Length: 150
Ligand code: HEM
Image (tube, rainbow, N blue to C red; front, top):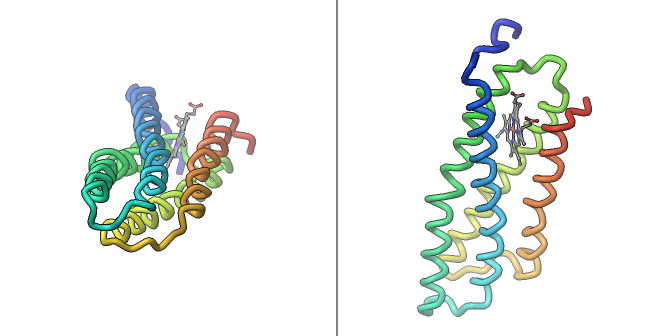
């Protein structure tokens, strides 16, 4: 892996800065998505208010969280190959957590599509609990990335 180290050269700090910028966009959107679903939950399917929430949620998905997640992965992997994987245990742990969180992203998008069709596959209480997940992931992943404890 040594040959990969430093391939970003002088662009390295720019890539890291934009990695963090897109992390903020992604996480901001992931804080909003389950919260919007909590608001949509009690609304009568097919009502004008339901249509408003469906539009808001679709925009959040297509304009913010989808593109932001892709950018975080692209820039994050560029940084990962730049510093190398050997000896960076924190990076392996971070990748595992972010991989699972990306799965959650896909799953909650699926829930939002079902809710747009009038289904309510998750209870309102369940959605409120899921709304805490992005905060937890943010705390653990930022501590891993900044403190690099192992
Ligand atoms: C999608 C997969 C991701 C990968 C592959 C990845 C990879 C990396 C790598 C390799 C670095 C170190 C950069 C360097 O030393 O030059 C880094 C920095 C950082 N990452 Fe990620 N990352 C990902 C997602 C995230 C997420 C989801 C968050 C926050 C919730 C995050 C927050 C940070 C922060 C704050 C830094 C800066 C740490 C510092 O400079 O002290 N990353 N990332």
